[in-house]
Image (cartoon, rainbow, N blue to C red; front, side, top):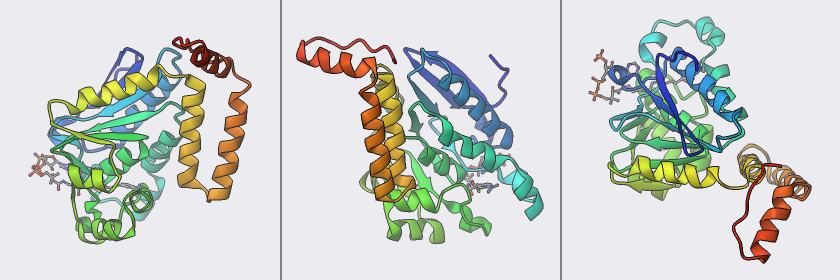
Length: 258
Ligand code: DAK
């Protein structure tokens, strides 16, 4: 395993776990942290025994955004040349589902990263925001796009233009997160969700993720067409026969990923 400096990784019961580990900077997403995170994501994605991936931070901070100290003196050319965005964009290539377990600050690039995951489980103390306006910039890693699709135009405008921070409960109401739990329980909930999905039919999980993401990324007609193609494709798999057979025979299915 590579010698990561900014993240901790482990595997447990079919789940690959990535934990941001820059406590002194509230897990600010430095280019190095992003690079390591994406490396770990691809490593887990390539392992057959891993069925889902969990990304988390600390109870105090999921991530307080991109590293302002590293950006503060950057020129436009530096930003254009930076591999922050190409690295960030690679998260979209991960085929396995990614669940974010979020507690405390989830700001700027941190919120953009959480929104790049497939599901979010939050602690009651989680706070979601796009405070870039405070720094004289706007979100640059999907914060205006994914956020608007998730919470709607009115709330997204307030967050992007006036640094409105959402409480965990508000984030749940607006559809940004799946569950909100007490701080002692959010990680276990996120893990059990990941673990359950990890033991489901792998091909159907992969294509299901792809199809739901299409709804975000394409016009409806194109998304529906893609969904249908993937649906048909699964009828060429052994898992489809096994899944439907197991239902009829009233037994638990045994998934093979074929
Ligand atoms: N970057 C670097 N250091 C940070 C940080 C950040 N984002 N957030 C916190 N820290 C550091 C603080 O500087 C402090 O360090 P020391 O002074 O102790 O050395 C330490 O973490 C603890 O922070 P505080 O003392 O401020 O803690 P508080 O509890 O008082 O306040 C806070 C917590 C989260 C409210 C506050 O730290 C804060 O406002 N942080 C900044 C939040 C923020 O503005 N985030 C957005 C960053 S901009 C790109 C596309 C997108 C992006 C970048 C590039 N491209 C297209 C290339 C993304 C941009 C962003 O995310």
